[in-house]
Image (cartoon, rainbow, N blue to C red; front, top):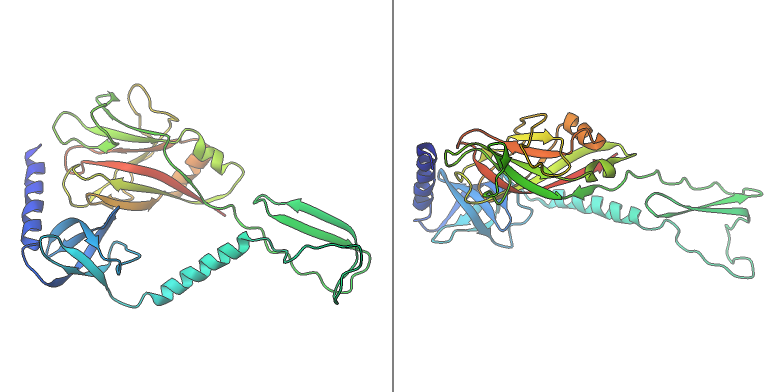
Length: 310
């Protein structure tokens, strides 16, 4: 461990100890979200993976929360405005999405006699087809029309898809580094800078073929025990490999610091339009991380890419 890294780690530990020796309830800011809790800033100290009560839902970085201090701090609830209106909009959006997933035909029946009731029109030729989503579409050609046809709903964009890496790895000194369990950037021990890679085969380009891509996001989790606990930026690059190379992992476009994470945190970044275009076309195949020195040393898991179409 370098002297700079040791000093930073000592500061983190000292601040965390002083922040948890009190009691009662205090307010704190959420720095990041982890798999099982949150990272908090309390009195200048960074507390890692603090557990949360069920009352604190829809967690996100930047929230102010009430924290019960003690040997094991617990987040009790969110401070601020009532999130009800936001929840209502989310529910309405989900309800619309579900309704569009259902067939638009209310009933399909038949018999040997004419249907009962009013409003029926005799169809001379029926047409049926299945659209790209697998939904049935019906069209009836009429000999004479007595009522206007309802307007067919517009075609929806293809549903978003999420693609997970088929493989990952770390390189140091121009070759794979078998000592790193997860993709890693930087140098913690003074033995050389590491670079990590996330590989997707040809799945990204295949998912985008024939479609218009409007957005790509990538989700990472920063591993605990990799570097200092404080937020550090991910130095992201593109690469052109479908699978891990046996030699050096060469970097393409980048670096771009799209996301910063504290230890144990999970975050999502939106890829630049130019990167999105290259990945969709197959000109680029995956993502990489690389940093120099110990300041931004970290390891990552995850790497799933979510593609949204229009």
